[in-house]
Image (cartoon, rainbow, N blue to C red):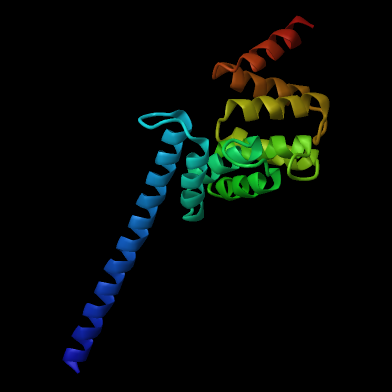
Length: 186
């Protein structure tokens, strides 16, 4: 009986170590594939090749790498190295946004605002910008401020708009600095 218990514990430890290694390796491979995709996109250390970048990003995105999901969405949205497919771009951005990537949340807000890859929905645009703005992304703060200033997807709230623009302006966003100047001039 003691031998069976020891055998069970040993097997359990071996399986646990194997699974931990697999999960760690999967994450490493995904991050490395994304990095290689970014190198291909920028031409850093390799010839610039958007098609190859997309291949690396597809692989890494399928493994769950949030940055690769963001990058693949951007390529699909713009048609860089792949045919334009804005609906698929939105799907990849959703996956990255679900992992907390503020840039993906910003992109989803802009897609909903313009009805690109999804039906236009100002309330959804505002929701995605709010999530990205809460993470401190200046362009999301600016966009959310505009929505509050004109009442697009939310009730008009000019003090809230000015507060959001101030946050974005403090981070150096020229558009927000300009809007603050215009509002204070009036």
